[in-house]
Image (cartoon, rainbow, N blue to C red):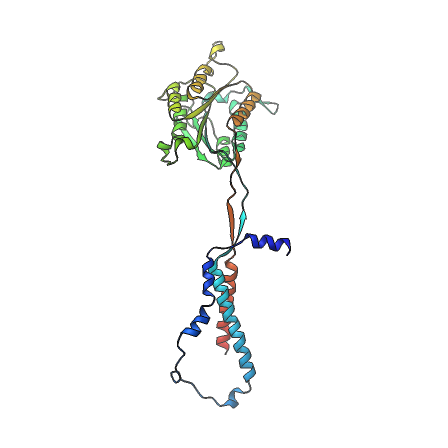
Length: 336
């Protein structure tokens, strides 16, 4: 038997195979139902000379056989459609890790500073973060990724989703000034935790069943919001969420030399240590790429998920045949 036929038969399936038991129903009806009593119907006697020119006994028998064939074709096609024939094909397996990751990104006014290089040009910190961050998000296929942006206030730009492409677009479309120009690190982390905490989101999934991670990036010090970063980091530890912090900018508070709005590296490091995560220091675009790769490796372990069957329904074909047969019966009945 040719290989394509074997492959077709192995993929062929019926949604309701018991419907095939209806096939002999007309035979059973003919056998079990009582015959029509004679004399119960009327008939109009027409002289044979009037119909002999249009109909012969042989023609009538031939038309009767064709009509029976059409009737049986209609019935078989209808039963086949009810049985629900389909092709069951394996879908492409996607990588899966069982992780939920929320990126919490500083969108304060200092992110406009042009002290990063990208493709040989000097660009703003935000442009560099968008390029590297969007690439990181797209690489995390199989994870639920979300995006929180913060400044004076914190805002969920993209709820955790497996649609990494839409989350990456949300990052690329983020603009400074949308949520203010200050730096509320504590509120940003708090909102990210709220999106990950099963009790807050109403999820019935156990907290231990999914690895939950926040990647927080800031280029300043906490000077807005209602919460302190270290207290929120302690909350992250209590609910089992690791926090990776990224301190962005060429200078920090230890070597600021009077410069304003520099990154608070010490606080970000403490936040990561309290939650059980890791702190990173980024001064250039190359550092940012290295950090993204490092976090991707730390939260790796992705494997192929079990493929889900992809079902392609075939019932419209026999249903269409049944419809055509019904139309043929209607036409021939009117013409007789």
